[in-house]
Each structure stands twice: as C-alpha cells, then as structure tokens.
Image (tube, rainbow, N blue to C red):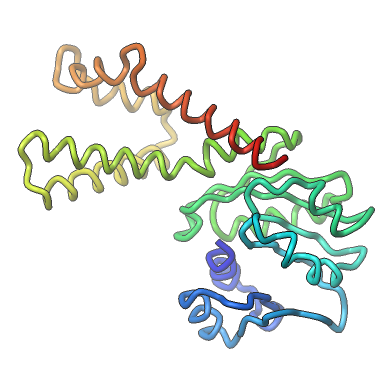
Length: 258
C-alpha cells in the first residue's frame, strides 16, 4: 500500500527528492519502484536536516511498535503523521509521539494499487485544517477520500471498504464456479465472471445511478434474472449474509484495536 501511495504521489508531481523511505527489507516490486525514481529504502533514518512535514506509517500493525519509534523521533511540532496501519488507534500513535502530535488514521483499500481506491480518514484534535487538506491531497493520489469524525466508525469502515474487495473477489470466484456448474468451459467461465463483475462495477461508478435502480433495470418481470434474484434475495440470502459478514469484520476490528 505504501508503494501504491508513493507511485500515485509521484505520478501527480511529487518530487522524489523530497521523499525518504525507511524499510529494512522492501519487497522486490517496491525496491524496483524506488530505484526507478532514484530512491533507495534505508534500514533506519536517524537524522534529517529538519523535521519532515509528513510521516506516513505504512507497515503491518503487528510490527508498528518495533519499527515506528525511530521515525517518531524525527517528528517536529508541525509534522503530520498519517497511519495506514489497520487497527492501530490514534491513541497508539500519540503514545509514541507525545502530547501535541497531529495524527490522522487512514484506511485505504487495495484498489488503490490502480488509483481506484477509497480511503476513509479520522483526525485527532491536533490536526489543523491545513493539515487535513494536506492529508486529503496525499490520499487522493490513490482514489477517493472520505472522513469520519468518530474514530469508533473506523471498525465499520474496515469491514466495509477495507475488507470489501475480498467480498467482490469472492463473488467473481463463486460466479465462475457457478458458470462451470452450468456447463461452460473453464476459460469462458472465468472470462464471463471477471468481465461481468468488473464491468458492472465500472457502470456503477460511472453512471451515478443507485445500485438498486441498476439492478431493477436488468430485471424483467418473470425473466431469468428475476428467477436468480429470487434465490439471492430470499431470507438468509446475499443481503443477510453480507450483513453478518460486515458485522463479523467490524467486531474483529474492534478486538484487534484493543
């Protein structure tokens, strides 16, 4: 995710010379991205000529407490810290940074890799309006940006948009298997499933029409779509399953944030 964000920012005109990257073992694709822009990951950044304007914490949450403190020491009174570590609360960063730190917790999702993500942010009380605008500009490099004022809502955000791409991929996977069960060969089943899911998502994104209206537009009374939807929309069907799935994800997010 950090690599996708960096790539999006550079594509929008960020001068790579203004960036320092701390990573003791960057993945091969990230190392190649950095090298392509004349950058190299540093195992540890111990000093800068002046405090950075922004620190972006883009590491796995389970190693945050081990790797973040050295970076935290670089922060100055005007530094904005943006975390894209799932489940790590504002308070957990404030504990490293001390009183007065400006911190934004952000939850992007994997379509950020192609610039089509959505990121939801929540700021602590120290974030100024200018820093809020700066954070929005940074995260807009990989897609849409939205804000919540109550950090507790980030658990629901995580379950909906953070985990949501997996639900869509499962839909494509299940549709492909169902196509095979209906007698289509494997290659055509995969092609139909992928194109249908991706194309429908693009139609939803570009049309601005409510999902319910688009569904109704496809459905002729008494037709094949209506027959299929009678199964998916029955009690205990897709809507109920998704509600249970999102609530399960939300609950797990709360557990991990403790």
